[in-house]
Image (cartoon, rainbow, N blue to C red; front, side, top):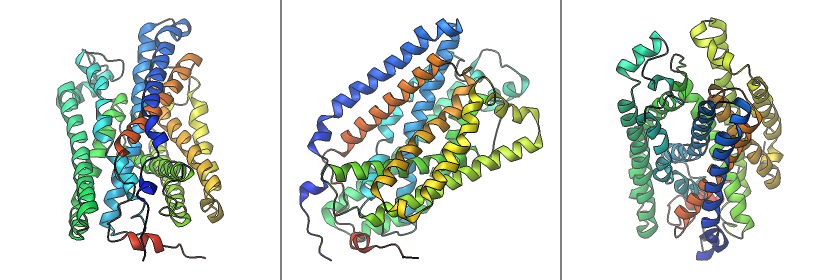
Length: 413
C-alpha cells in the first residue's frame, strides 16, 4: 500500500504551538479565580474559612483526578493494543502515546495533595488528623493509612505508570527511525505483565486517593469504577483531539471514518460498562444495608448533592446510551464530537460526585469555584499535551501494521 505523505500533515499545527503559553496562563488564572471563590466568597455563605478550605482541597483533587484519567486511559489503550496485536489503531496510536506521556508532568500536580498531609491537614483526608474520628479509622491508620506510607505508595503508582509509558514511547520513537519490526514484538511480549502492574497500581491508587476520603468505607470494585470512567473519557478526548487536528488540516489521510466509528463504539461500550459497575456497587451496598457502607451514598443524597446523584443516571448513562447506540451517529463527525463533549462533562460530574460531597453542602460559590478549577485543569492539560506533542510525528509512520490500519473497514451489518 502506498503510504506517501507530507511531513507537515503529521505535525502539530503551528497555531496550536502558539497557544501553549496562553492555555497555561488561562489554566493558572482559572485555578486562582476558583481558589478566590472558595476562600473569600464561600465563607460569606458558610461563615467558616476552614470549611472553605475543605471545599478547595476536595475540588483540587477532583479536578486533578479528572484530567489524570485521560492519560491513565491512554496508557491502558496502548497496552491492550499490543497485547491483542491490534492493527486498526496503528494510525491513531501515537496520539494516545503522547497522552500517556503526560503522566510524569501530571504527577507534579499531585504534590499539593501530599503537602497537605505533611502540614498535618485533615481537611481532605480525615485519617490524617491527630486523633482518628473512630475506631475503624484508627485501626487503618496503624498499618496502612498514615502519611509516610501514603506518600511512598503514591510515588510508586506514578513511577509504575511513568516507567511503562516512557518505555513504550521510547521504543515507538526508535521504530520511527529504524523501522525494526522486532520493536513491535518486544512491546507485545511485555504488554501482558505490564497490564497486571497497571491494574494493581490503578486499583490501589483509587483506594488511596479517592476512596480513603471516606476512610471507614470501602468498595472492592472502586478501582474498576474509576477505570471504566477513565476509558470512557479517554476515547471522548481522542475523538475531540482527532477532529480538531483534522479541522486544522492535519491527519486527514490517517484518521478515517472507520477509526472514528471504532472510537465511538468503545465510548459507547464504556458508557455501558461504567453504568454496570456503578449499579453493581450501589445495589450490593444498599441491599446489604450495613450502616458503615450505606452512609457513603447517604452523604451524596442530601445537601443538594442528591440532584447530581440522580442526574448522573440520565446524564452519564441513559442519554449518552441513546445518543451513541446508532451506527450512523458513530460515523458522523459532528454527532460524535457532540457526544464526546457531552461525555467529558458527564465524567467531570462523576468525579465531582465521588469527591466533592465530603467537603460540605452544594452551594453557589463552592460550585462556581469548582467549575473554574475544572476549566483551569483542562487548560493545563491542553497546554501539556501540545508541549509534549511538539516535534513528535503524530503518526508512527514505520509501524509494520500501519497499512492494515489504512485498509481497515468495519463490517456492514
